[in-house]
Amino acid sequence: MSVQTLLLFLMFAGVIAGILCGVRILIVLLFVPMFSAIVGVGFGVFDSALFFAIPERVFGVMSNQVLFAIPLFVLMGKLLEHSGLAEKMLLSLSSIAHNKGRSLALAVLATSVVIAAATGIIGATITMLAAIALPALLRAGVSEKLSAGLICAAGSLGQLIPPSIVLILLSDQISNAWILSQRNLGNFSPEPISVAHLFSAALLPGLLLAGLYAIYLFFALKLPNGESDLVVRKESPAFSWQTVLVFGVILLVPISIVFGFATATEAASVGVIGTILLMWNTSDVAIFKKAFHDAVELTGVIFGIIIAASVLALVFRGLGGDESVSVLLSSIPGDAMGALVVVMLVIFLLGFIIEFIEITYIVIPIVAPVLFAMGVDPIWFAVLVAINLQVSFLTPPLGIALFYFQSISSINALALYKAVLPFIILQILALLIVFIFPIVAIWLPSILI
Image: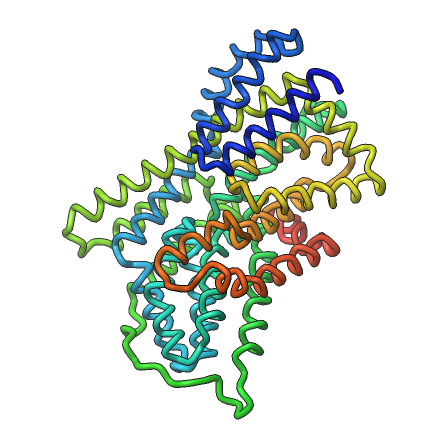
């Protein structure tokens, strides 16, 4: 084993060990690669001139037009959360569910798709669903196990259905990898992969996954007498014009991006302005201050991780890791499809211990250029990755959705793991469907863009 290979192995072992030990991810992603690079310079296997490229990488991240949309989407979600608009929408839409358990569960699923897409923040969505929908579901006779699984799964759907922060981050990395792979093949003017491509590509798979959830709920809640379950008390407010307007603002954002009426940043700006206008009767300045504070804090975390991950990617390439990965994937039986299966398996396993931002900015730059050079469609690959990352939100021990639900409920960890298992199986089924039938992902972009 060469010194370079050993350093690569130790670097990734150090990253995983640091994360599992509870060290802040930003610190792990920044200092472990830097230490590895310094050791590499000492052994003469890492070019010290690459250190001067770090400021350029930071500037590239902060000036990336695609990433400009992230703080705006985060702010839009925080405004909807703290103003109570998302909560009112959930209560209003749940009131038309005929007040029966199965109908209520399906209504919670449908409304959470919209709310999750609006907030774009899993914690906010699951907290809201657990506080509002969980008591109603339990009163309707839906078991705690099924209710918990539904809220965790439905609350994370917004990361697949546009507008989605996951898809924005993926579009940045997929486009970079696509351009790099094409330049290596002699094509110096490839068409970039835009946010609109991924928004349109993920729409049908996202609805497919929601549909699988709905089918499962329909049969899981069916009772022998034909009735779903008990009647719940009518506590929800009536469906209002404000709810319609919130829906309109939320749907306007992805539609304007997919059809090319606006860029992601422009659409997100309109979404923020529309949300603020819908808060016209909110006189409490504290709500705005809290929303802006939380948005800045979360945006800082996201961009900090992106910058740190870009440093890791730089060190990885400086140690010759990209060449090693290219050789490894090319040697896998089955050519491109075999390599793609292995990559999906690796992402699935990493999802148990690493969050989606790190996977996006560590794994994708390493494997995507190789897969694209082997002929894998970039849009199809991006959707497969997005669905795979969807699974990671529910897989223990670091499933984000599980953490948030446990923090506000009395259900124990083992029972929660069992509750989300059927939904994990449905996510894997959706992944297999899109893998076997790529048309599900690539058809809509082919006719819209």
